[in-house]
Image (cartoon, rainbow, N blue to C red; front, side, top):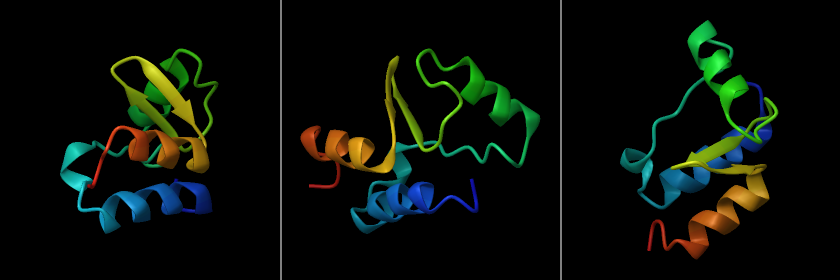
Length: 75
C-alpha cells in the first residue's frame, strides 16, 4: 500500500539489499486483482505487508525482515 509505512520499510530493506528482482510486489489499492490476491492468502487475513514464500505467509515488517535475514536474502 502506498500509504503504509510498514510496507515502505520492507520494500526499502529489500531495495537496500539489492534483492528487488527476487520479489513481485502488489499494490492492493491499485487493482482489484491484487486486493483479491491478498484476501486469498491463507493466514494472511488481508493485512499488509504480507510475504508469501511458496505458501509460508509472514505478516508485518519486523517478521518479514527477520525472515529475509534468516534466509540470507541480500547477503
